[in-house]
Amino acid sequence: MKKTALLAALLLATPLLAQPGPRGGKGNGPGAGVPAAPAANPFAAYFASLPKEPLGSAEAAEIAFLREEEKLARDVYRALFAAHGDRAFANIAAAEQRHMDLVKLLLDRYELADPAATTAPGEFKDSRLAALYTDLVAKGKVSLVEALKVGATIEDLDLADVAKALAAADNRDIDAVMQNLAKGSRNHLRAFAGRLSALGAPYAAQYLPADEVARILAAPRERGAVDETGKLLPGTGTGPGRMGRGRGRGMGAGNGTGTCDGTGPGAGTGPGAGFGPGDGTGAGCPNR
Image 1 (cartoon, rainbow, N blue to C red):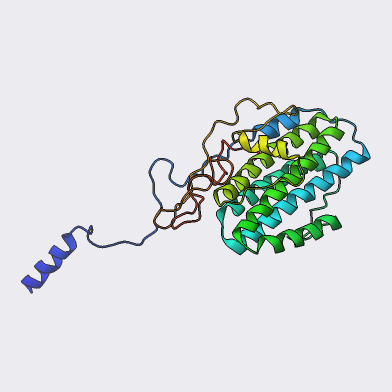
Image 2 (cartoon, rainbow, N blue to C red; image 1 turned 180 degrees about the horizontal axis):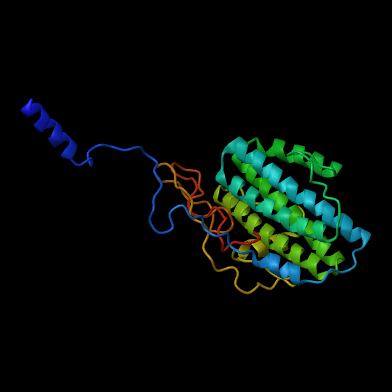
């Protein structure tokens, strides 16, 4: 009895360090469980400071069309990501959602109906865009090279249409949104054309003049938000992209040149390429 009592006492006195507890407990160190504050959007503040000006019917129609055209880009890229699994399409699709949100600022400000409010992916009020979606997705599903050509074609078209909108509009708030759409599309065109060039299939201009496309591709990637003249807003364009969760063995090659165009290091297609830097969602990459 004495030996049994002594053994029980020793067991109770033994530290519990060797006994594993449940996994997944919450930390209690500095910052544990506290989500990071969302980065301020410098363009939203600038947009709010601009005057609301009279809006013509042609301008209203152009805003509605561009809302759906940005949706076209988003929906096509999502479909091509599903077809090929290339992370660039997912990253740039997320940027196109932000472009849609920019145009929505104008719809809300001028109390215009939103043509994309209730349409499902691949559905459009504009019949031309509906037909274009079907055609582009079919072409892009053939191969990765064809998908990249589709991406470059969409950005080429977007730039041509935004240029028309800029030429027709005289409202500062409209021009500011269009300048940011154009900046983002130039970055996306560089990303897709760069991939195509690396694969030995350089992109040929279809909507913009060839010399203009050549100038865009020769220029460096643009960062930050801009005003209605295309001038960089103070405090933008210098922050890093957000670090993601790398996957696999880390051997995938990056397929772009920066952290804001959605195709930088970590966004490649080799083993290990996943959600590394280059997802284009960082605080320093507003309004891409």
